[in-house]
Length: 369
Ligand SMILES: *Cc1c(COP(=O)(O)O)cnc(C)c1O
Image 1: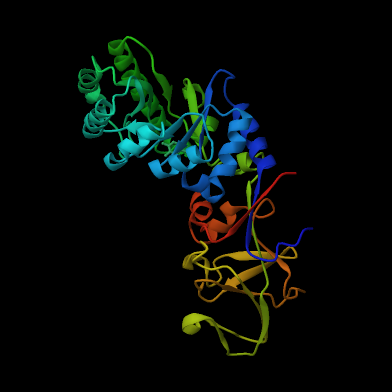
Image 2: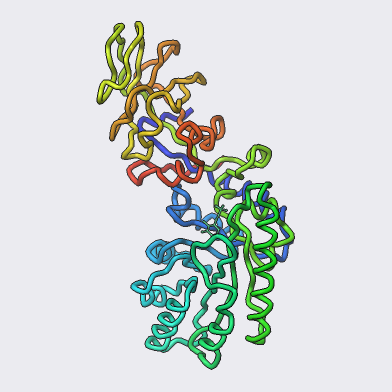
């Protein structure tokens, strides 16, 4: 085993390739695949992940904000990049870097057309998002006529795709609601395509959508969490490989007497002789305070060591009373042997949150197997 020596997030590109093949096997060969790499590729390494996905044949990328897309362009990503949440202040740089905006409201449509005209564009690619029940971003069904009036005879922009987003794609109890969203989206896409006289690409499914509603894959799917090895479902998780493994080491070991306390606010009170290990990993690295006070644990030599007391900014303390371990030994926070989903559940949150919370301070190490 290679010695890491400090807190390290290993990013396994072979696991990424495995997950991509798994997700592709769930859809038709002709369906395009958009890789969602927003938020530093779910807290991993956006450039390394995007370069690998580009080499594996992903058709499209998506980021949340323009700045993320610019980083990808600067790193040499040449595939189309959809910006899911562009803001008017970003429109010029979106065009300068050939990023493709999600247009989600009448106001945004008008403003982007104005920018495209100002910058002398021809058929600049735009994507229209429709709200079919998530009630977050998107045009409404009754905006179709307005959209058509705005874009007809405007050669500066071209609608490349129409899309929507499921509100509860992972929840079997919401099947009726999801199917209703799909049907609403189909109707909208049909109505707008009829008016336009051509058929933009349609896409609606995220990772859980791909797994639960493959009939709604249309011409493209958008996957994030599945690529990183999590599928919001135990059986799916068993077939995916976590891309990110968070490891750290033991900085110091203490022997604690009965009735002593550990950490800020004296939150942990010892009920006997205890052995604790201090780890160089804290809330500034992404392990938030809800993980403290026994809510989550790490693995040391395969054994569970609960986080005791309050999480500090740069450190956590764990109870290693029953573990044979030394200063410098490796600690597993999450990874293939102990999923981020399980770790997150201790703090009553989800894999998405713990992964994307990992701060840029944590060293990234790209590996393949
Ligand atoms: C983040 C995001 C996705 C990816 O969802 P996963 O559940 O991670 O696959 C897809 N579409 C939109 C609009 C998103 O914001």
